[in-house]
Length: 224
Image 1: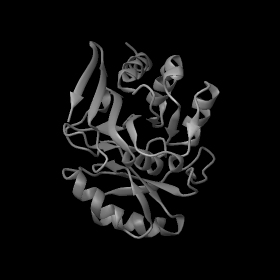
Image 2: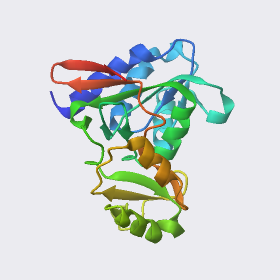
Image 3: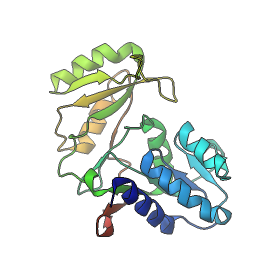
């Protein structure tokens, strides 16, 4: 199966976790897009969704699914999102789609995080995928130096025309390579305290409860 077919498979499998009559939290990215497309088939069973990005909001609304502001609703039973990496404990690296801050907000408001991914995203130790960090622009250069002190090579994420990518929150993204994150909770706590960091893309506090992993043999369910 192609990677696109695997994403479609796992997006459809995630429908079983959607709670009828309840708002669902929806993440961001190419795998989540497959889930959103599948969600359209059961949109009459839910009031709508809380979205983690402008891109997901547009896709949901285009399919006739209502989107609520996070401040308009209370607790959400389940949040469904992808990951750039996930380890054997349910800790993840996220932010390849530059929506990490809003993803953490919706995940924190949700009772259970269901991760949907293909098997290429499963790792033993986080860090093969560069860690995204949303930062206040004026702090970028100093944070690049601070990551270098811990052995990481950080660079501002840029658009094809060379301009820095600007997130939905009006901030920039640093992508940090060269790290092996053996203690995701500790790493997340430390980096989140650095002045100028909005959110680090290590999801340890808001880790996955379940991961639906698409493989050539079908969908494998991992519980953490």
